[in-house]
Length: 195
Picture 1: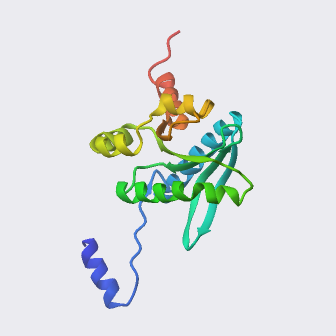
Picture 2 (picture 1 turned 60 degrees about the vertical axis):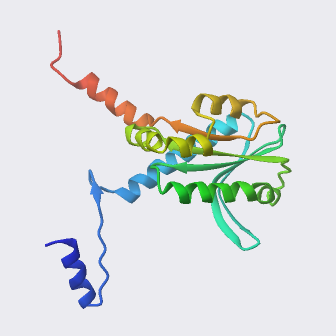
Picture 3 (picture 1 turned 135 degrees about the vertical axis):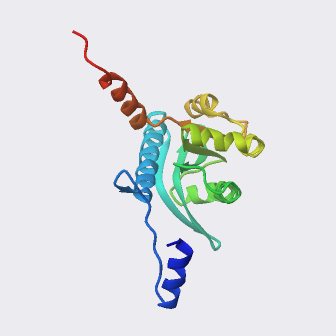
């Protein structure tokens, strides 16, 4: 039976059809949320180690514009407010860039509610590194080059020492250590033991 046929039956019964896709025994939404949380944790730890003040999942309502920011960070010496958007997968690009642009536009105002007196703002998109993510970015290279011209190595340099003059808009591919360690375990454990 096709999904369309099941949906037709559900509508006839005034019922709602819910489809849950699982992968290796887990719901994909739970896996994505776990990846998202891990990335937030890694980025927040890195920022704090470099003297940024950090707030996580900051909700805002500025003149009717509502939303939340994954990580809002403030560098008190450089007086920079940084909006960090975390994605475990690359979503609808236009909506993502629009939302991040709006958050950055409001960032200094949002930061003031936390007592952070920033003079300027920047934005950082952090994505889980992997072939699919890299391919998606490559497919939309022009968009990413314009929207996020600063990349991983330069991102790390800027975070360590925020420049006082340049507008910062960066893309950071964050390696998934969990997947890397799993691959290493497979390589180590595979094959017959040699005496």
